[in-house]
Length: 457
Image 1 (spheres, rainbow, N blue to C red):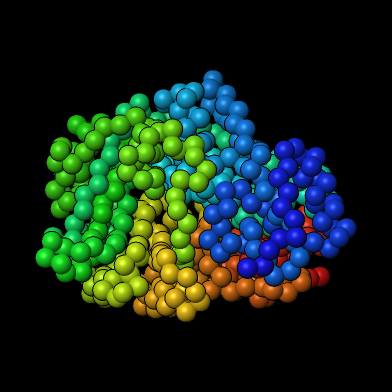
Image 2: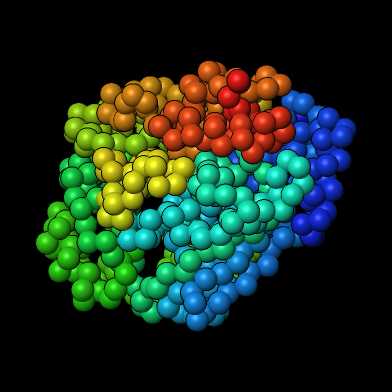
């Protein structure tokens, strides 16, 4: 593993300014780490001399309940953000993701999916100001950075432009009581038909209703490997309003009252988190709740429902040994996501996408040969699903970073080379991002293997 020359844990903005200027003087790259969840490790790995600016000490949250806004420092984790908002009000929340150990810096600046995206959009859609330190060590807010840079750091990834020390977010209202359910169905219990039908209806549901699907492999009661589809849902209301909605829009799932639970919003956040069974709301504030494991991820956007024969071919991959701990997560779009223009912020994947897929494979065995087995498995699955997903470009989500899409190891990132993966992550926003980069960081100080490039003049 290539190690950093230094790890700096600043407590103030002035300390970050000093690190940036010192790194420039000593020809060191910088990498900014918030939660450390970068899928390819770009926030803490590099093959060139580099220093990590770890924002772990910048984790204050200042909430204005009356005006429904909050300032959140760059080292805050999502679980703690949700928890702190809940301590101020049971009716306020923020539409961020629900993996509690993800840092707000990468999550917000890449877009930020959550279960509220169909009603309120992404985390990045609800950011109204930020403080960023640029390559010259200057501290800028929205007014002084200008609308171009403010546009870029909402969905374009902040690490290409500077160090965001804090974000001003707009809080949204949620009911005091929401409803959740998880219904598991195997192939023998009609899972293929249910997944197929879900594709046609999930993005059209009432905006208060979010149902994602988790695809995994399980062992049936008779010891046979099979695929399980878990319909995992949150509804912004009580069960008595949920049931008739489901009967009208997705009766095939056969949801009944006994399948559902009513919870406070923060309890629902815990329900959707990946924390172990028996965890409490207080555990959302823990920084390291899960054991380490190896994994590889990819992403896709689906614009036309995958036919049943396509799904059945997908299930065959889950019969292989490498799929023991693999998972596909299907998250519906529609609603507010279809109303926001692709160019409103740098995140572009909006109208026309009915859902997004996150492909994941996990393993515990050490060694390059073992890793290669599992990575080859997910690459083959990704190749198989090509005909059924978005095209020209085959889009991807930057927060599910994937170096298979292309890398730049050059001292100065090539625009032409970067465009191979750049248009997948950012579609037509990529060129504008490169223009912003050229304007605010012409020397390309903030860079990594998939950073926004400058445009040569």
